[in-house]
Amino acid sequence: MLLIQAKPIDTPLDAEMVMEQLWQLTMGRRIGLFLIGMHDPEATEDEAVRLGVSCHRPGFEELVADVIARRIHGDIEVSPVGEMIMSSTEVASVSIRHVNRMVPQDGGPTWGWQRPDFLRGAFEQLKRMPPGVVAGAGMTLRSLPNAAFEMSMTSFAAGPGAAVLAWQVATTYAGVGVALRHPFPSERRVVRLMLDVRFRWPRTRQSVAVVSAFWHPPFKLRAPAIAPWAS
Image 1 (cartoon, rainbow, N blue to C red):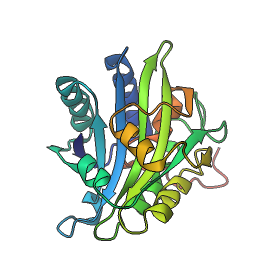
Image 2: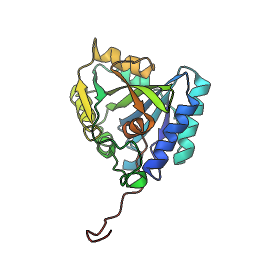
Image 3: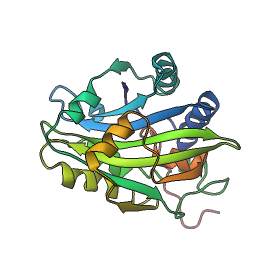
Image 4: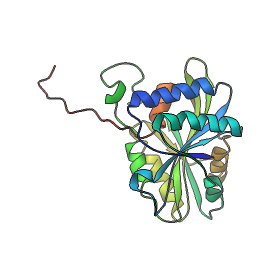
């Protein structure tokens, strides 16, 4: 897995354009995208979360990571985070399935940089990991025609209190519109499959816009206050 500093991206529309680039780049291939939080006493609060990229083909994995890193001017690092997670005595996960609610998919008053940041709670949660804990959310994606992805997603945690942390991360996605459930057959196996980009349940077909709501770098800009008398 390759990790990228989760530096802010300019606007939600820029984040969606990154996802469109990945859709074009990954046609016919599966990739894994992750938001990962881990305790690092030397990191600032803004450096505590990493964006992760995983793929079966190392050269292609580097290409996908480079697309993301260039848009946010972040550094790429090779990390044994997968081994750290799977070597933990406590590993937990929660399956996340999108339900149609509150996700804008086409132009309108909430389009572009005015769209709300659905993952603000997830980033805030992942910044506060205690020592010895790794937590996050991951998805496997496969490009489909008409700017869509087949998407499967889960939250996960490894270390003391992993079960509670996995659910806490999962609930930060409530604003996007999700249903949560215990994975089957085992939580540890689900995390292993996700890290290996082989997790395929529950899978749904989603547009680039919806997938971008579930995974993106933090947003740099927020909508300014609008006076009630403005038209």
